[in-house]
Length: 149
Image 1 (cartoon, rainbow, N blue to C red):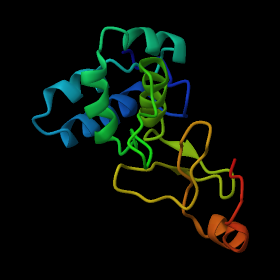
Image 2: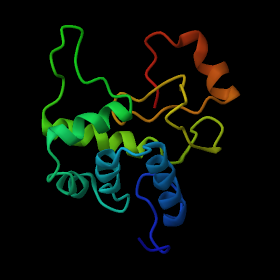
Image 3: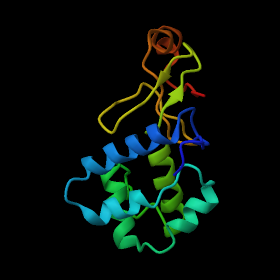
Image 4: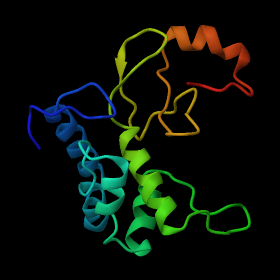
């Protein structure tokens, strides 16, 4: 990583990006196999480059990482929801969703953590909304069926 690069998914320096990924790694505790998968993510890479970086990991490594991020791996009938390719993509989005973003309602930079429960979550990239007053006031009455962007 170099300080002269910027993350392609959010507005921040690489130093801040490394710091945030470091915080996520600390939350892994002694689960070295999960740390190994998360460490393969590079915010400067495109999604395709990050998927390639995840190629060497088996599903036996990807599943516990998904569980760490709170990703539901099976439906109510216990049918697995992911094949390796789709799980790699979902893990990349999970990591990106924890990096800072700019709120489209209040223009404030915000960041969700693994412990946050955002009001809305994007169905495409899984980024959680900012829970600012603007979001709450403008969207709460319409929350059911609302598409958040």
